[in-house]
Length: 107
Image (cartoon, rainbow, N blue to C red):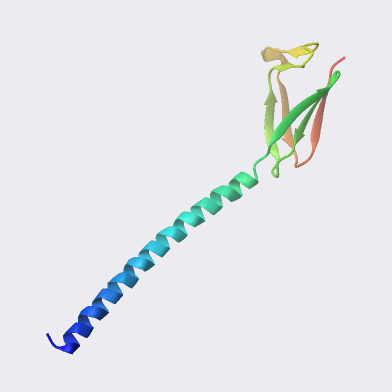
């Protein structure tokens, strides 16, 4: 083999390595894009907390997105003074915006 043949072989090997590296880089970029989309979706989700103060229950959205169609079925206070159970006692809230809260007052 002449020197020009060795140069052609070396060039082919270098092109093959660069091609493999480009495919690997593209697949990693696609994986990172999917992960970023997933994280973005999760960051916009609502996060609902519920706490009570005596006869008043507070439902607060501490997430970054609006909580839509919230259904509350069973509520029992820590002191077990207040209990809501059963299908006739379902409370539906259409929307709780970011950092907004909803009160349920029992008499």
